[in-house]
Length: 136
Image 1 (cartoon, rainbow, N blue to C red):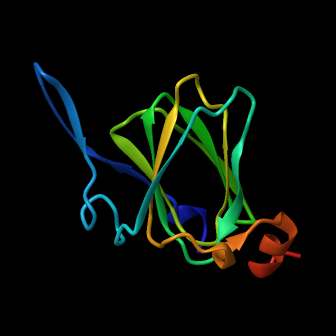
Image 2: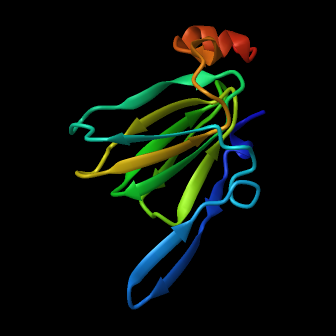
């Protein structure tokens, strides 16, 4: 497991004179069964979200409105991905530390998750996370 498994996926958008319709389908765009959907919105300027990793959970992040940066960290390398298009999502796999930053005004982050909420699935301390992936 590592950063190479966190990939951008293109979502299908249909457009006509009535506007746009972007489609997200499990099994097609999302490589897991969707068990939970939630939204981050109203994030004040300068505030970060995330700051954790998951042991088992897989997620698809989509900027439903506006944009934000996603810092991905596997305890060996880091990369930042800017999400600012409704027709592109980011798959985040287990054992990846994530931080969401630089939310533009009015941003909405839609997250599709492979599991229901489970507090035991979280690493909330970076040192514990890095030890779990073998980084000392």
